[in-house]
Length: 250
Image (cartoon, one colour):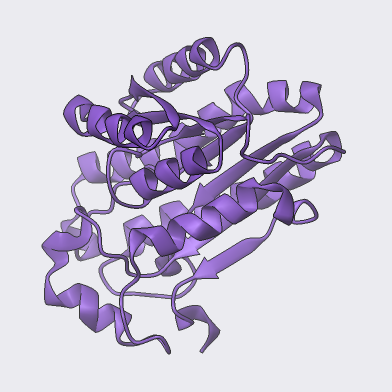
């Protein structure tokens, strides 16, 4: 089966208006992909697109609210339209992560986390993976978290949603891999982004538990995502690449 190199491919990256998603969009564009930058904040999204274009890359912004199945399916339709009828690379990066004691989590947070972190990737894969399979090639990278692989107090909701996405990775690898679509997971550790800035010192305290002893930069996570999206990972199916400074290895 043919593999997918970012050059000349169409890549849809969710949650791409900042942080890991923005860094991934920029890197894929640098390597020659036409990147579809999906997110809720139009101003930030257009800023990411402008930055990519300023460096000679090709990118477009797609407004996306991933909390309903209809909006996710609409995103898939718009992505296919902008991509000339195809999406070759899908990066399910968007995620929300409210933390706190289980008994204090409101039902609205439970619903929102599973809508965005689990259901949205499910619907996007359902909409886009069959086309990849028909063409005999494609790459899907799901972004999870180290909190999906060991217990962290206050992160039950977030961690469980990403653990579900990790299991979906394996199931989709079995389902679509025989038809040329590679599906893999990148599992980041604590990473410095606009979203994690609210954690303050807690981010560094969490990062200090890993052998690397520090938080990651978004570009370090993006490099792993781009690897799995490209030809260098042509024999990698259903894998989890932990980019967490070694935290889940010790």
